[in-house]
Image 1: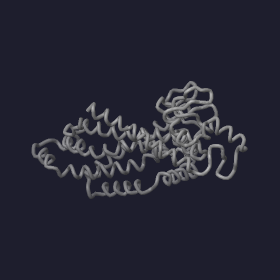
Image 2: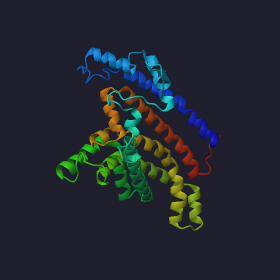
Image 3: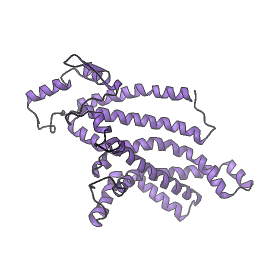
Image 4: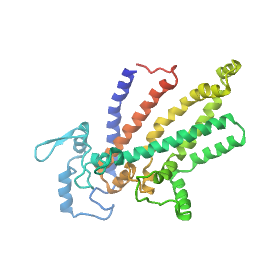
Length: 332
C-alpha cells in the first residue's frame, strides 16, 4: 500500500508539468494581455507597458518565462527568486502587491483559514457533495427496493432531469422564482457568515451530482440484489434490514465511491459559473476574473491547484476501495 501511494504521488510531477505547459501555451496564445482592459482598448501607454513587462519578466522569451515560473530565475538585482518548486506561484499582475498564494489562501485579517477563497470553495464543494451523498444514495436505494413503482419512476424522472439540466440553467430558474417572484432570498447576499446564503448555491451545484449518484446507486443495487449471496442470506433467515444494510448497500457502494472522489474535485473545480452567478467569494470566481483580466500567474496557479485536487481525489478513491471491500488489494 505504501509503495503504491508513493508511486502515485510521484506521478503527480509529470502531471503537474504537463498541465502547466499546456496552460502556459494556451494563455499566452490567447488575444490580449494583462495590461489591456479588453482586447481592443489599451489600459496603459506603450512606455508604461514596456516597463511593466520588464518588471514582471514578460519581455523575456516564453521558454525562459516558463522555466522561471517552475524553477525560478535571477532578478535584476542579482537575487535568485525560487519558483513553483518552492511553492511560489508568482505575483498577481492585476492585484498590486499580492501574490497568487495570498489571494487564494490568505483569509481576511482576524479570520480563520476557511474564510480564504480556497476555504470558501472547499466548503461549498463539501456542502454540495454532502447533499449528493445524503440525498442521492437513499433515493437510489429506495428506488431499487421499490422497483417499477411510482417511487421508482419519480426518482428516475428527477435523476434524468438533474443530469440533463445544466447547473447554470437551474441557478437562473431558482433565482427567478425564489429571489424575483417570492423574494425569499437575495441574489447577492451581503454576508456569507450564516448558513442561509449557502443553501441555494450548494443545492444548485450538487443537484447534478445528486441525480447521478441516485441513478448509479439504483442500478448498482439492482445488480447486487440478483447476486447468489443475497439469496443465500435470505435462505439463512437473516432479517431483511440486515441484508439491505450489511450486504446490499455495502457492496453496491463500490461503483458509487468511484465517482464520489472525482465528483468532489469536480464540484470544487466546476463551481466557476455558480460562484460568479451568486457573487460567491471563492476560488472559482477569482479564476473567472483572472481569465478576463489575463492575469497569467493567477490563471496558471489556480489551474495547477485544480489539477492537484483532481489527482488527489482519484487517489483517495483507490484507498477507499480497500476500506469498503477487503477483497480489493492495491498492487505494491
